[in-house]
Image (cartoon, rainbow, N blue to C red; front, side, top):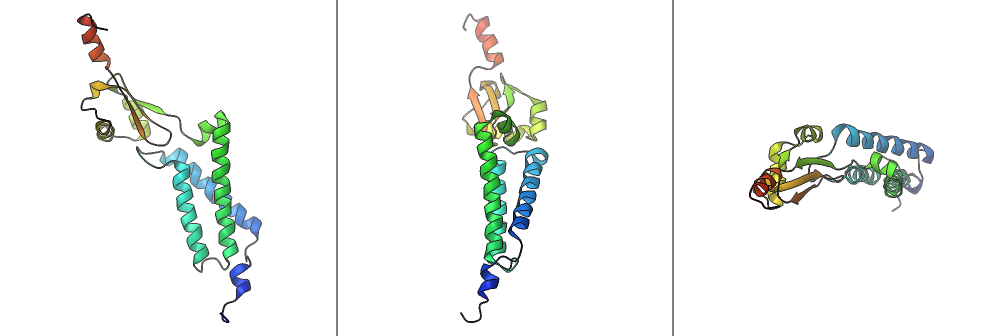
Length: 176
């Protein structure tokens, strides 16, 4: 206990405003990269969830290790990351314009039993990945799917019902 330099452990060496700015720049840069460049994958964590986990783990690791000289530096960075995550989620919850910016809109991948290839390509989802997700929802045949969407959280939702080809064959038989 006598060998511990308590001022080095507890007092920040980096100015708190600098830590806030650093945390802000890193968080927002990674947010933009993940939201607009990397996109989302089926079943993946939401962008902000993933980002918070990665940054918090790194910030906590640095605060526990010797990368930062004080616990205060690490705690300031963790606080900055949590602040931005909370602020962006709150803005997305209360304001539709922010929601469209922070959380990607749902995108339709199947319409009346037909794959929407352009949307699949835009979301970087292969036909095999989508068909696997559809099978997880209990559909063996794409014609059983009225619609499928990739939701803002990366999960696939499937609406089962008669696809276009099945509705036509029912109409030909006098069934609606």
